[in-house]
Image 1 (cartoon, protein in one colour):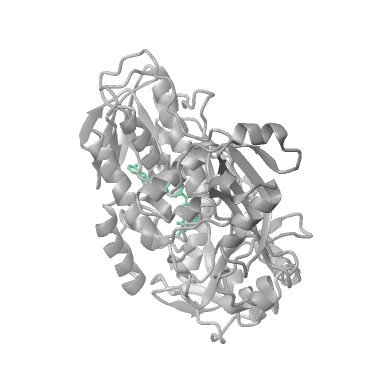
Image 2 (tube, rainbow, N blue to C red; image 1 turned 45 degrees about the vertical axis):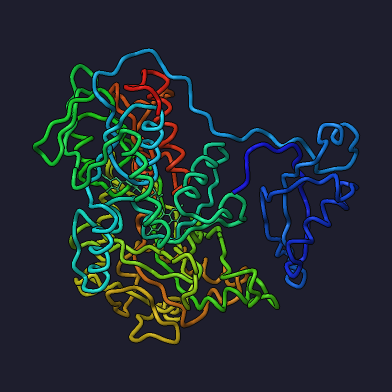
Length: 540
Ligand code: FAD
């Protein structure tokens, strides 16, 4: 990995995908009009892919360049796309003056909880991090058993356990947010086993295989820095006195006194949402999306996206991100696309079925899958209860469970049948990757009519953007309901809820949508605590 101090950032260096890395050096010398002796070193800051013209696919680089005399060079340089490299190093916030009698508690070890815990530990707050599920090794065994035999463990599954919801994922690290803390997250991933390229690649991803190792190393780092991480420890109650947190209960029995709770529970902790509602924590309905996973042969996607370069070794499995505005006013879009991946059983409750997608670092499986989602909003939930979005999700998950055969086999339909309003009776040439099994059927029975009609229109429309999207044999697997949280936990500018000392964070609180943004939100919650309180011990 590169060092931190650079002087010159050079953008828009375009090279053919067939060029080797030496070409970059030549391009720097050409663009800056300098001799080779003046160049000390260079590093890739960003690598993008320009695939707009399918017969001229190229990489476009932004490079950080070290010269013998950078300052003098910058004073004289008259061309475009060259500027001083900004300082992008993450720095801890200045700590506050209030004293903490007890260590802060972080609930959840998803990206938000792990990074909140890590920052607090790095700053000397000795956090206690609590996770309802098991450590990642034990959890992986439970998940594999569920995928093989359909035996669900309510506290140890794709949603619950060390690493949180993204552990069995593609590990895409793309994010819409622009925040310097993103680099802190990526660097932490690199220092615990992710490849260096995630810092600059146009579509960074790590894959579930690497993620499972990374989360374990971050946990050990928290412990080494004086924190504590406890599994099988579900927070079942929050003790509140005169509008302030005083402590929590674990598993209905063990009490921990604390003034600070960072609540990073993810979007699937429905029992915890109920507990928060009962304790008077302000919750609000929130829009989200529902739909299906759609699976195509990966080769079809490569051909459509890369044309003659479809098998080029430098490109890997192609992805896509598509959207369509439907005539019923709804938006349909693809989400969390997993090139060369698998559709996974992602349920966390008995009698309810949920799909999602994941891939390994190599992304080398036969199929590409993506969620095909339609936006839904509080008007659709038919109730003003803050948790009405959760009950709405549960209704469709139950129908999908029953439609699949009440054994966690997923209901599937071929795109061709779906478009003709015909139930599927058998599969075609695309083999579904979902396990423990699938049931060909009619997806109209497990999704609302407005979602079905929006998906139908979108599939035809999206076929014009990605050739083959409406492939007759492509498989749709229902239902995808957990794309984001249906609930928001209200927080103020200091990131505190209506209860003093309670800091909701991450996706479950409604402030993030993905691994990196959840991790960044966890860092922000830790910073909010640090700005108010002194560390418990001096920083290590
Ligand atoms: P979570 O990751 O959900 O973590 C919350 C944690 O809190 C869980 O471990 C849970 O067990 C624990 N918890 C809940 N309640 C309690 C309680 N009462 N007591 C103690 N612990 C509790 N995002 C991407 O950016 N890229 C991807 O490629 C990607 N793929 C995905 C694939 C799958 C299969 C899934 C399910 C999600 C995927 N996501 C992906 C989404 C991403 O995982 C989430 O956005 C992210 O994990 C949210 O982080 P979080 O920390 O807010 O919550």
